[in-house]
Image (cartoon, rainbow, N blue to C red; front, side, top):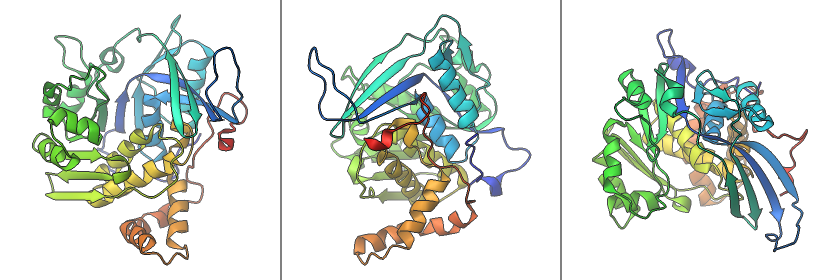
Length: 370
């Protein structure tokens, strides 16, 4: 079982703590990723890919990213009774240490599948699936006590006339972190932001934030969101991330790390997991943003969604390599200063701490060839 031997929240834990750090609900997909394609296949032709891997996707990206960072993570999701469902369940529970006590298997419902094809760092995807047999509220029931929830505000979380599982968790002390996806309708209704009333944090990207707030810059969008939620965070691609924490009075902007980005799949989930961890650990806003940005940067250098989520072993490797590098550039000095807080954390990371794993239906994944 690839459960992290390092618990970054250990110093603050007590017997009265909730059993979980993070509770999630959503759809798990089987992701099949092909890499290293020279071109997409033309009509009536076949092309061979240099690399291929399979892993749980969808909400599993976030669950795996959170568990690899040492958070006690519980996931409520529907799983099919097919081999794909077996694989996803086994990978999440046995390999990644995610609690599935609120998840269920359903007969005669096949697992949703996404095939992702990477051509010169651009992705194209084909997905097939059917709605889950029951809602998230039915799956979760009365939620277990948890320190945090990360939820997609664009998805219905409640049945009409009933309190949502998210609201029940909030009433039981959980911090609610809200995320949101692209509005394919183009409406970008400001009423969507009404859901922030019960949230502790909101984590849109810059395009989403500007569209919902009717502003022209990421900073202006951030200022609007900071009036609506205690912790407002806007991710801005290669420009990094910016945030305001109204509970501490902090405002911060952290640039993105300069890394070769191969595949952005799941990078937002990894960023969210890092931010939740930093918030629960009580880190400063700048350190939270820096850590989340680092986790995302480590992820985009690998192919394959949840395959790429870093563990504490990867983070320790990066810090040691960066700190000890003989690089006289001002940029390198800036990075070392920015991540100096890791010097207090990494010495406590055991040598066997979890690192990225090759989760695949085949005996060995070969995504590294992509």
